[in-house]
Image (tube, rainbow, N blue to C red):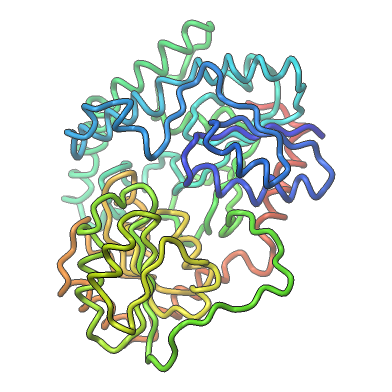
Length: 429
């Protein structure tokens, strides 16, 4: 079977798909990948041919300000609306034309497509090939019981909250995301493809795919009134890790009562004063081992500023291994990192708002697997109090472990590969 993977050129969209791609490759399928040239070396290491963007603009975490200088001045709803139009909607035609050209030389049987590319309708309806929607973020499909996206709401618990959330949903649909919706409809109209008026733009990949691979567990999602039978929660589908026979365990400082892992991610990590510095100030004198992964920015300056023997600051750490002995994970709420933490049964302290992190962190709070500080610039005292609270109550870890156990013993990569293989004979709807 010939399988085309297609993803944005953004780490958090590309990397979660690599475990599935390699599993399909191990099963004997011909796997190739359409994405930005930034992943040339990574795909070469995986032995997967890169089919690079040709017409499509390569939107990366590190070039958005260069491409769109005005973006740096935007905050809140205006930033969401800008990204919706420029980063996500504007490339749809380019994606489709690129992939149509690829199919002439690589007649793929199925396409596994990043949910945020929004090209699913064109691929399934015009190319007639089954499309698998790969969702590396929380479930985007709208539902009467699920709050509108981007506001960090939890499900409403009283009539006032229901009214507020309904108003926010109208604001999101009719104002914030209106330019993205208009762009989406305009590009589809050029191909003679009508788009249903009901529902939201983020519903489209769910409507037009043969199957949906949803990373994470159903227990970590909000309750839903309507169950989409095409959605398969596969658990914590982690980036591919090559076998490392004989690799020794790294030596970490020992003798501490607890270990706290801290990250500000790999996108919003330019300003360490948002989370890394407040976390270090909060935890450096509490007698615990504090491990900070900077994501490759400002590491040396932080090492010089925090020379304490219980503080370890690195560009990167082996998250799966470090989380094996971590007691609390302090994060800005990237969905991949949250899933990885829960896959190890580690409770969280989360502090993030932008890039959809408020919605991830609302789920952390709702599932009671961590404490949501509801800001991207928490005070050291708030971080210290949250970490201390989690360490003092074993219920937090027990709930994190219960989420970890939801997919049972199944390997998420195998479950996802089964979804792809079983969907190929089906026609997209």
